[in-house]
Image 1 (tube, rainbow, N blue to C red):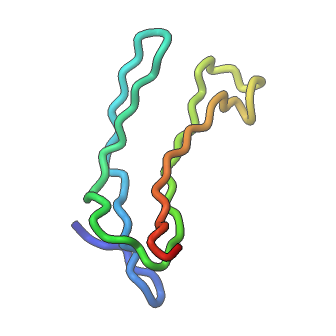
Image 2: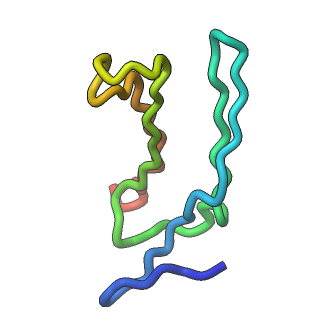
Image 3: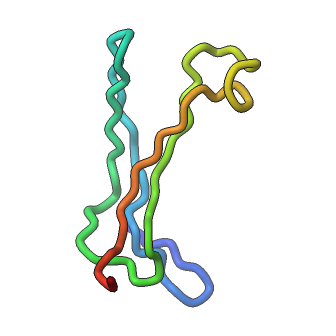
Length: 81
């Protein structure tokens, strides 16, 4: 696993490596596979979020630019509170 590096710090949070999804016509079940677990608290970030946009009807006139749903999951570093 390589860690992305920026100017003066390492970007120590996991990357999304793949996405699996299953749908039955009513429910969309999605699994985000990460490059590593959240074993350490990234000190340079208060919160880490992953998200996806879902276009459920392929109509570009519905939603924002055709996007009907936005889903966001996150991890909050509350160790400093």
